[in-house]
Image 1 (cartoon, rainbow, N blue to C red):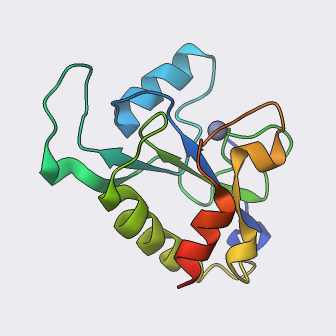
Image 2: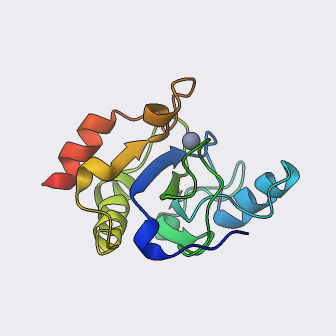
Length: 149
Ligand SMILES: [Zn+2]
């Protein structure tokens, strides 16, 4: 895995898992099966359903799990990996209040301390950088407005 200086990070890119369940460990498996060294994202935000068919566990809703270290270049968006952080929300089209209103804003706030992240305009949805994608199936203007509050 390529390492980098944190001062080179200029964007934060939001993704979804396109699954109704999952964890960082599960995505690690999926990405290894696709030939990645390991999970391509830096963070995963759980929705409370860890495996297919499992009951919703409120204790796991909104939990943030670490994937790659920030100092490691991710593998989550074509052409923009070297200068970005990848965050994956578990979910397909519906996300929980804990994910969207609590954990994501808290995580973004903590990343704002990165030297080259100047503001919320540096937060993108995957589809904004790859027009063939709809990921993360969220209106990013609404997300940016929400986190700017
Ligand atoms: Zn994506």
